[in-house]
Length: 356
Ligand SMILES: *Cc1c(COP(=O)(O)O)cnc(C)c1O
Image (cartoon, rainbow, N blue to C red; front, side, top):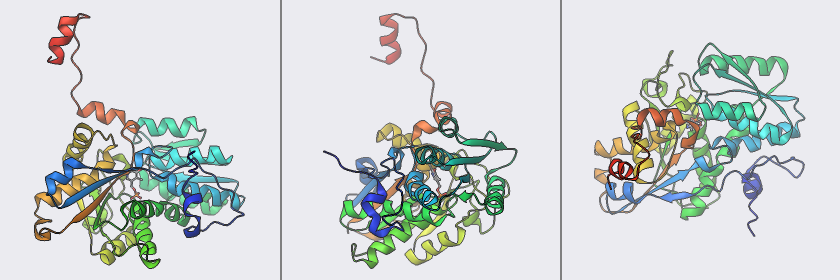
């Protein structure tokens, strides 16, 4: 029998919970680390590339790892309600875990800038969803103010419990590989996740569970790359809505992760993101949302720029986090892929159109 019951139960000795914490879980975490033969081969025979497929969490993104801790703690503190601003996945996750934990959930989103699947999730889980005429950064400013003025618990990633829960992804990777990877690639939006991964790796290192630390390689979308540019972006633009953020809340922590790990934070274009997105779906059978593909787009970019030329023949283990599921954002998929041909309801016509 499978007795897996979620990240709090598995990793409670590393998390800020006690036996008094009412655990609100949907069995998040325990996501697969999928070996990628195609990308590994492309990099060279001494490379091993793995995809941490976070789209397989209960609401379809890594946000669930943090949300189980944030909502459990909110319940423990007897909060009346939680609130968040969201580019989509935070609201989907907050809404689901609030439903599970019988908490009120208020969600503020930028109008028209949320992928359809994510909006459906927030609504169907009965969050009180309010769309504003503004972007994510505007929504975030508003919910911070409401949370502090009216005593609602803010469950965006500046909530330290979110980071605590999300660091369990590093633990799973190390438990699976037997050590840390040499490089960890991931998309960067509000920069909570790069902060969380780095915290997780450092903790495992301090407990001597691993013998090395990875270089953290974060990627922003070119039109929403404040950390790369060194200043906030007023009107962020990118097809990857989950990382369309102009003023990341965990900016400083992201820079710390980069500096301490001797890693990097760079930008990838929307074209590079879509090309990696298609590669993952078409060649590896892994369907992710556009933002998630920024990690692999970044890996391809570094490879092309000769970043790995110096490693020689020693083994290099790379993990790319794929942050969310492709079904979240079917509109982007449909828009970027050729539509199927339409033929008469006739066997011959079907064979011909299918190229058989
Ligand atoms: C939230 C999110 C990101 C960005 O993560 P941050 O912690 O904000 O940097 C990337 N991809 C997806 C699918 C997300 O939901």
